[in-house]
Length: 162
Length: 160
Image (tube, rainbow over all chains, first blue to last red; front, top):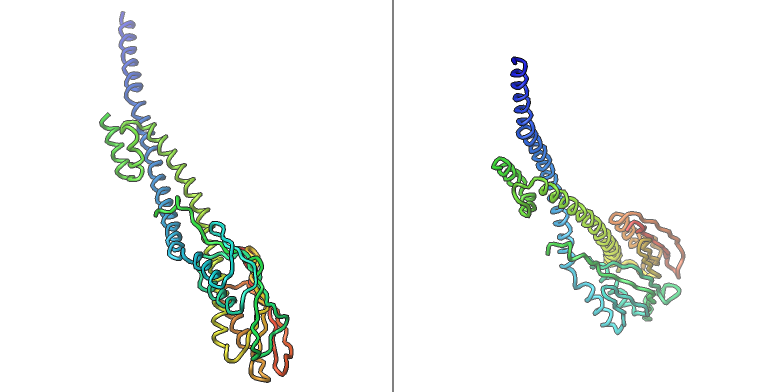
């Protein structure tokens, strides 16, 4: 009789402890784990976001620099046309081949010397005179330009914060 | 439930950007929040990778544009500086992207007997200082009663 009572009490205690573990301790441990995981991921995401913000700001600065000089390409086209030259423009790429005067050539070089957003992909120019023209000789020389290809630097507007 | 909600609010408040992302999930949904933040983190890292790649491309283009600009500036400045003392005759200019910039010219001092070649020395020093990666080949020759220097300056732009 005493044994059965003791057994019953122990069984009740066991069930009580199991209930406490199952419904109290395990959910708490599980919650703690979830909270720690979420905290870590949230901290990592903050860092990732800051890095993205820095990269995005830097990219936008370059975009602003390019925008501030965006008329260079159109000006180059207009400059060549002002000498009755006919460059071919395809989107933001300009190509030209032909003979130009020394004056136009000199101005073209000066123009390139002030261009911030023009990529000169190809430029092959040679003097049409074989040897240096005589000092003080009034004859003016010309330059033969073959395959001038100039591209305006473009940025991806979707990546810029503008 | 209140404890979980309170903890979630603390996490969102301490990490504001995560908080913005987590607005899309119920405040008590930890598993959903973890999934959502993980996905957003991966997506943002992919965007960073794209941004970095595009930025490097832009930088390469801008640096290349700077090299060509400085190259022509150096020639123009040196020419202006010594146009009274020397006559410069450009024979050819060659630019090939991802390869080289090359100028071939004659430098002729106007003063008989002078072999100073001020333009050549100045332009070479400027190009070398500003851009680097410079090679040059020179050959001095007699030209009428004057000396002439035939020179080719090459700038390596293969990295850009």
